[in-house]
Length: 210
Image (tube, rainbow, N blue to C red; front, side, top):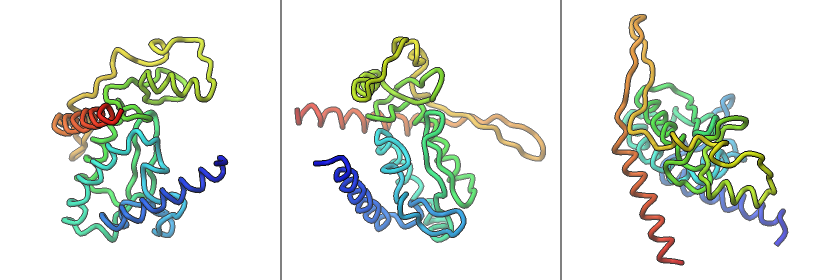
């Protein structure tokens, strides 16, 4: 099968997934134009076009957590994603409406994604130190190097921050109230554990199938 045909089949497959997920959750999960407020056909749903497939399970967890909140607040017809992408080695998602409850959930998953391999989803993966920042485990780094013929002058341990790659059980942000700056730390250990358990189950299934 030619490369052009494989890309066409993947695009059709992604569009079908988009339709199924929109039917399940609502059109708010798809990327919309910031100008017209309509779904951008070429973007469709999130993880299949916006970033590497290693974050797919993590993003589904985010959508599942956001869905009841969006419907409880009655925002399903006014809130939507205007941009979803990888930036500085983590998930970045921007919505049409700013809501603190929704923003904190998106920020939580962005913090977790910073130490989840973009390609395979392995937790506790390091971020590269310089150049193009990405989150990549050693196995995927070696596979991508062989696939694209990259030649690195420095070993993996020098290019990636392997000493600080564990997913943190907290994430922090700065909150301003009446002109007073407040640093807030949020406990996300339950979500981190849920993702680790999901990853472990997936690895067990792969071993059973091998």
